[in-house]
Amino acid sequence: MLDNDSESMQVNIDDKETTRTLEDKNESEMFRAWWNNDVPFDEASAEHGSVLRSVGNLHDNTYEQQQKHSILQVMEQHNHSNNLEIQCVLEHRQESLISTVSLLAKVVAMDLKQDAIHYCTSVAKSSKDNKRPRSITVM
Image 1 (spheres, one colour):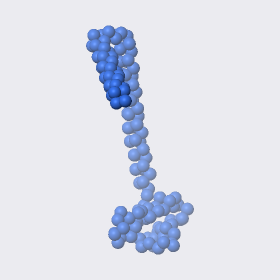
Image 2: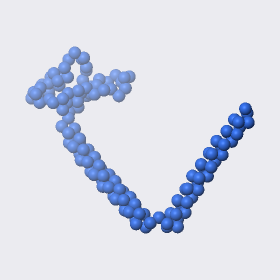
Image 3: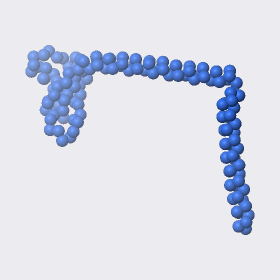
Image 4: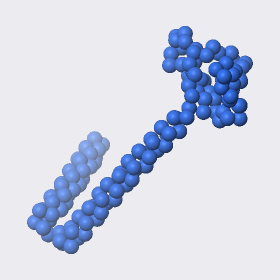
């Protein structure tokens, strides 16, 4: 019984070695054909042209993405230029931030209507240990 198993294992090992040998031979034949220029020039030239076009397209896409990114950065800076940040305002959870900002505007004699405030939020603390009150951002 052991002899059949060992013969079977030997056949499997021989099959794997034969397969590896054939794969290696196939690769070496392909390399030799390439090295000896047995590959048709038209085929290689067409593939080279295709690769060059792909690289050109990638270059163009990268340039377009960089342009869009820089435009978005400028738009974001312009958008944030109209924001107002108020720091060190004591917090009251039940009180509306918009009403707090309106009261602060009255204190500094600024005519600010609640309709003029598009968005108002408190900025998260960078550290919970920080005793300083949160900032308020008004847009």
